[in-house]
Amino acid sequence: MVLTGAVVAVLVAVALLVKLPSAVELRDWSTSMGPWLPLAFLGAHIAVTVLPFPRTAFTLAAGLLFGPLLGIALAVTASTVSAMFALLLVRAGGWQLSRLVRHQAIDNLDTRLHERGWVAVLSLRLIPVVPFAPLNYAVGASGVRLLPYALATVAGLFPGTAAVVILGDALTGHVSPLLFLVSVCTGLVGLALLAYEIRQHRRHHRAAGADTDDASEAALQG
Image 1 (cartoon, rainbow, N blue to C red):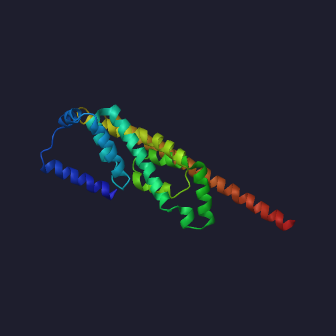
Image 2: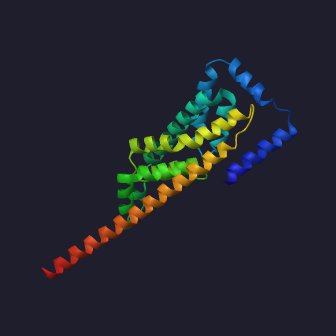
């Protein structure tokens, strides 16, 4: 959040001090550059957002430069590939929680994430204020499986990313307040899913604890 604020402050300062082209001029420039620009944008987006750099800047730029359809396709694809790279880098470095911390509670949580981690990923992706890169690193350190992670990332990123891309496109004309409503609604859905999954995890943990107690009592009686 601090880094995002710093980037926004720099952009505002540049906008005030430097004469910048209009949104329409930027769109015209993007169109004149030909098909290589979307590919260059895709590569830069992937490479930079593997690091803890605010993804919103690229998402807005995708809408501003390429319009809603191509912009959404580029932003969602780049974000998903970046998220996959980040997860694989964390695991290649051996920074998995189950290896770093030996505790029964950690093992239970990791097992749960291995089985149903996609729900947590989907929920957190839907909440706009959850930082992109730190979530990638955290999931990489957990037992979440690769394919469910990728699918949950696409599904969770799509609504919010589409809204921000459309906002970027709208900078060339009229900005609809419905875009902010979309962000609020996806965030609420994400929070509801996350709360549900936490309740299910606690219920599962209590049931497992009860089964363990029953087994211990039966062993003592036997």
